[in-house]
Amino acid sequence: MKYLESFSEFKTIHQDRNFNLIFESLYEYHLSIEERLILDREFGMINESWFDELKDKSRRGALKFKTKAGEILSELVKKSKEILDFVNSLSDKISTHLNSICPILTSKFQNYTMRSVGFSDFMKVLTKTLGKIKPEKLLETKKNSFEFVKYIRDGEMTTNLKTRLTDFFTNVLRKGTNEGLTSLENDFLFENEKSERKSFLQRLSEKIMSFPPFSWLPSFEKIIISKYTKIVELIDGFFYWLDTGTAKLMKSKFTIAITFIFSLLYAYFKYRIIKDTFKFSTWLGTEIGTIIDNQLPKESINQSLESLGENSGFDFMSILNQVKEGAKNIPYIGDILSVIDTLLIGIGVYLSVKPVLDKIPFQEI
Image 1: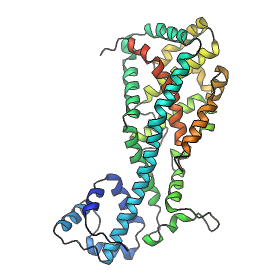
Image 2: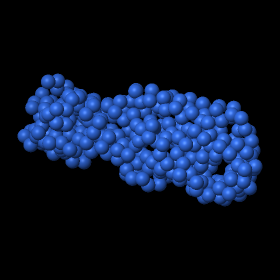
Image 3: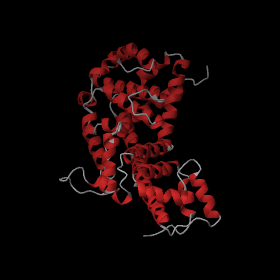
Image 4: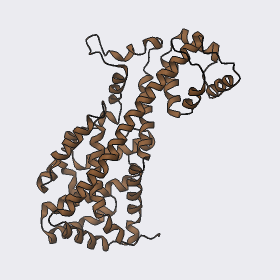
């Protein structure tokens, strides 16, 4: 058994909120009664000042690691760090995918729209229609959309994702049996006697799929056949969870931006389906009030991305294959990419029409 020779590594780790949650879950739900008694006698019971007291003992040279209690503490630290590293690894892989695919997918969609026949006419109609809207009506929408794209691009989304994934793993760890750290892996290696033997971290990761929002995140194959309004609801709920930690289909702080972005996407598909500038202008004129009031076009409730793609000539299969390829690099929770990549399609259209929005005076009320 490798003991902790010093407190230096533990001092830096324990300041991480995510490490503390994992550590305390292992302590509370996986140590046996005997192990907790040994640890408590040597280091005291865990409370708000527990880590600071250990740090102080270490400074004074009064902290002994080469004991049975030190062995248990060492194992707790080791296992907690292993789980935390795995959480960070999953988050970083999602972040890497996001950072690499975001400019590619949005640029691809921008190029696709801008080079498509009639896109300039679509922009003219959009510009003319939005020009009739009072600037202050668009103020909140423009602000929220800017903040939303910035939230994704600047890494705040990834930071929040690490926190939420830690919460998930902590919840799973709280299903422990208190049979001791040596039994920890066996708690997760088998679902039953006939189950395939898998690694502790793999089994742990698979278990989070039973918790919302992961339990209600569809694969890309399913998301493109879902009703358009349901997709927007799922994406909005996902960002509500990222921000609050509450997995419910509630409106997030980016509801305005998400609704607006997908309204623009729907309008673009609608233009490609109608193929008539005058008819599209008439349709947009009747819907623009709904869109500016942060609602989706009424008729979108009965549409799906698949049907819109087929009717407008847009090939979603190429994006589907891209999502599948990306999911190979993110084990266990690849379905999260279906939400991210579907969102990026909408952001691609938003960035395409952003020059139109920027021309509208941006002034405080």
